[in-house]
Image 1 (cartoon, rainbow, N blue to C red):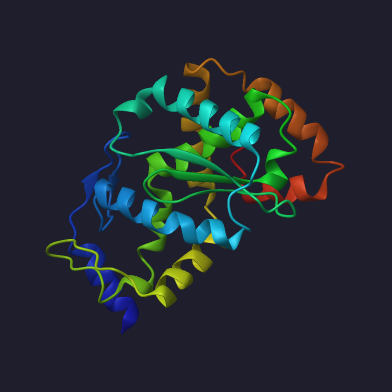
Image 2: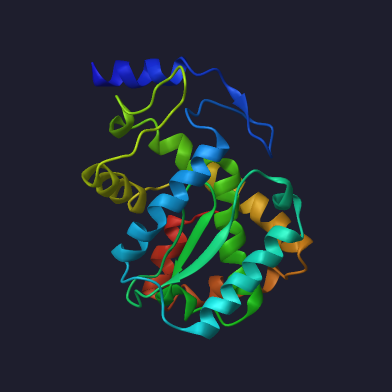
Length: 226
């Protein structure tokens, strides 16, 4: 029964073109709603990983590279509001992109990135997931929004804390399929190249290091498009 309800909610929303890629997608939120949701839920995601990394140099570098990626490509004309954060967790090697443009990488991953090109590769790949609306397309097919999303007005009411917690738990465990990873990689390489970053050096470094770095290998397996 629940599956049928979710299917109805999705089918009741006509396919809309992605505002950047033009791909037709069934997503029950507008880009503006994705932005609002991402901004609202970003603090809770940060708490899950020890808060924001208290390192001004790291924060400044990641934000500067992120802003350059956005301003130097078609991303600047998208409806999304991008912001970039480093999380305090030094034991986890991962990166995340909430719907709407809030992008995070853990300090555990940040410390493995030695050049601006490498940071740009991670951030641009996550930007690709936002532009592709991959998290929105996957997670809003789940049951947590049944009864919360109105398919006629597409209004999302304020979620109780337990549902925010459930969403974020699902989000953190989310694995994209090969098509989604490849699209994020394709978009990301384009954005990074337009911004003047060298992506070839990133690929060479990671293919060499993943043989000896278990955490890095797990990260690359999760983000297979990189």
